[in-house]
Image 1 (cartoon, rainbow, N blue to C red):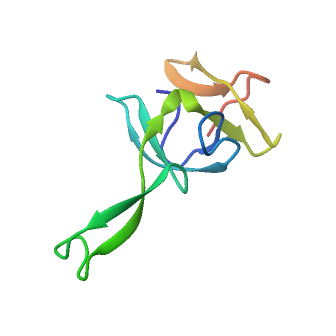
Image 2 (image 1 turned 120 degrees about the vertical axis):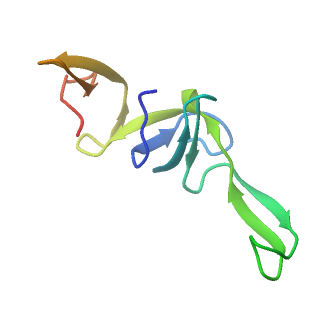
Length: 102
């Protein structure tokens, strides 16, 4: 999976199309990511461990990784990512200009 936790991504399809936000969690086995403020649903919670008084909470649900693109802050545009091996180490690169990310 080319997207990592903490990456800034842009949603390219779905009800939240166009939003730019950070990745909170990734689920590589399911190919899904949780993005801050995207795919928010209402969850009815009983009083207990999760919430003392219970009620209706807003929760971010995972979306498929194919619905997001890495957002490059330098160019202010979403870009495709690739991998490059340099001296035996694997790096993520920006496919547009072959710059190493991180």
